[in-house]
Image (cartoon, rainbow, N blue to C red; front, side, top):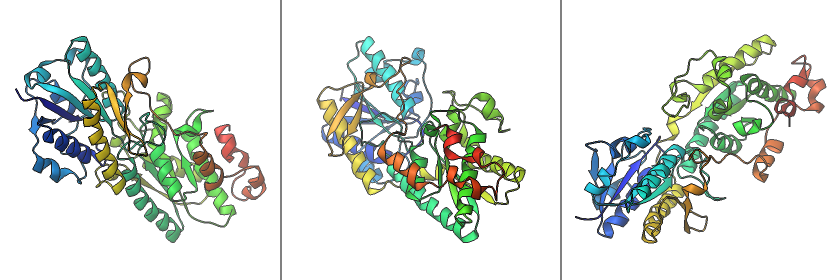
Length: 405
């Protein structure tokens, strides 16, 4: 039977998925392998009748530059009891290529161990994908899709900032980022937003809606002192993942939860929640500032990849073949800034529960410190006297005091 490789995609879409799929498929077809695509991710892999797509060069070449994913994706997370060697043996699979984020990588890690325990000689390579940029890759290596999503986010965010300036109002923007604030930070910094709020900021105190609201008001008052009547604050949705259940429920929104225990934030507008709570507080303190919510979410996930991701995803796809030929298995494929591909073994980046540890924004990094110290606008001790014209207790809106920095 012809030797084959199988490709599946897990989680949500990110720009560049099709570029990875295309590159992997064309490279292995060239070497005489059958290339099988699995619709439905892990659910299809262990189904009695998997829904598969056989690749040929023409199809693989056609999808190379497209957004979205030619293989339908799923967040299905199989239990250990669901694992089976059936698909691999029936199709003479020599390599399983998984494309996804931390949950997909963690499941790939479990499958890799399962195959080894059952003495099945099948290699498993994972291509790290997420617009959140939160997988623990080597320094300087982003997750693919991040730059394309950020580019589209910046395009929209700049328009929002111009609207704020034109109308003399404020906007509260929410950006995707399940646990990390890379996307919100990247967009906010690129657009010179006066306030950026990410979960990593709260490393010395708890994340609460009250603190988020006061941080935004701190920026509003600082700008009033400077004679600026408009502005935009961007908040990462990742703040929700560090809140207590009681804190989340205090927003008066009844969240549903996905199979992994994460709040299904896609069902609600996070920007609406931030803005609603902000408006209530502004009325309480008699500060007459209008603000409107804008969500940056699904609009970013299926855009066409920018040139960086087209090249980067191609390198990752070629890297799959390179590491496969070297006999590597149970690893993520990485490509450093020079274009060299290396394996990052999943066992080296997992926690005690076998889950891949997320990469958070480094609050001690020079870029981060530069933005938070020089790029943002907020109240400090030197502003207290001027701020009393707008609020009676400026100390409560002191940026560093709120965060206990």
